[in-house]
Length: 221
Image 1 (cartoon, rainbow, N blue to C red):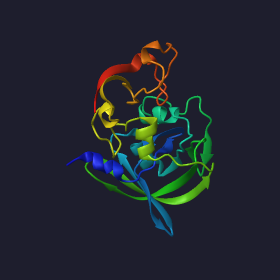
Image 2 (cartoon, rainbow, N blue to C red):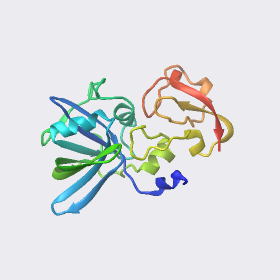
Image 3 (cartoon, helix red, strand yellow):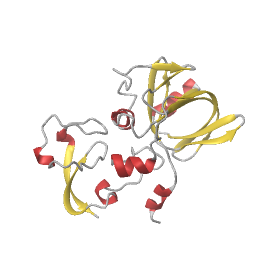
């Protein structure tokens, strides 16, 4: 099977947040969907290996912040490529609480859910959440999974339900030329300036890692 066809399914890009006891935490997710309108209910798929999974089970609530095309790219790096078990992802970030859980500002909007049921698969938990709060924060275009890959040029965290193991150079259709790829988040540098001439203060626009984290790869087409 050509797993690339799965990218033709429609997904958004979200940050799911909850509480680790009193401390806020969260991760990036793209498998979120509304399943009923009355009562309004969401389904969220979360990998067993995500620290946020265990925190949602203990807290009983989670929030979904909807990223827009204009949202800070660094949010994806902060919440998608490091573990909340080891890092305070909200450090230095303004914290806003809604209905008892933290949400992310600078997004299209947020939805807060109370967990009412869950289902376990071999690798993921599917949480069913009754919507208890939500609001539109900005009238902007929501970021889609396709936009994230094609425009932001990022890759999915390995725990994402939609993760496809491959080199991002191949997926971007770059052939027979060297490209520079962030070893942390998979962003492919495509700026007008040659990568070698960039200053040492250059940072990956997705995960904010330094230039030293980029590796040279040959495009595979």
